[in-house]
Image (cartoon, rainbow, N blue to C red):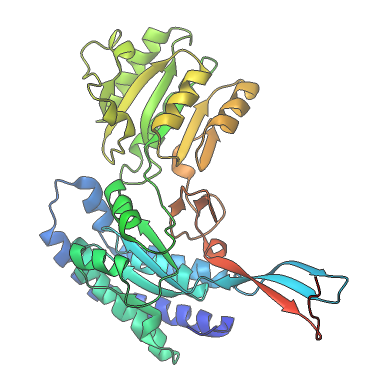
Length: 400
């Protein structure tokens, strides 16, 4: 797709904001069809599927935020002049075609596409079948905005394929794909990585850990734990595992208090064998696989560790590499934890729920990347470009 100037891209976004507002009743009605067909027992997925007035307002706000950001394309990253007279600039450039595969959340059809479009990429959207009616009306809105501004609707396309067709498309795409971003659970990510032939930027599972150090402020720890675990269970930055240092003062009483507070909030608490010595009535971890699991539910595991080193080892072994927190008043130990834990975001005395583009100052985000190549953490507008070298000469030839 050709390079568009900033004003044309911004005009599309302005049109899209107006169209979404004008069609909000149609959008919510289409979404209700999806909700009526969905199994409400999967509360986390159901919550992600809902589109109401507040959610439409959020879509419009996300576009407004991207509208106000600088165009990320064509920025000079480095420049130098060589002795032979060549002038070299390293500039940002679009990826080309980005395929975004996601589950449940219709707002991704807006928030992911607006970022990729402003970065001058063509976008292929593969939403889940559970949101098909919602996504179709949102794609229609995109097409109206593009057509209003004289652009081809192929800039943003919704793909209608089942699992087998998606698998074949990943293996043998009918057009050039430059990047695939899967947004969803571990099975989706594994499926894409197995079959894709181009670069895959992984938005990894959460399975986030919090370590209560022996020098933690206990009252503060409880407040952070409750926020991270219960504020939004369907988010990838929600808390799943809590590790408590056995050397903390009044360890047994504190573990009992933690258990009571979590259960009072409706959280199911599973414990390891060490914590079971104190909480004998709780279910005990029976299979190691639970330590790898992202719950997306009112459920957590509470485990005991002997020291910071043991906590770091356990987190690096089992976590999704997304977010991890240490609660402590010991700054030296905090820095050791933050340096040694292998996660995209590490926290001192704060909730993992802040791993979010808007909360971290990045703005609207496409996903939270747990990859280490290209970019790690929130994928905002500036991260949806690659680079390109511009070399300016005047007849220079290489002689050696």
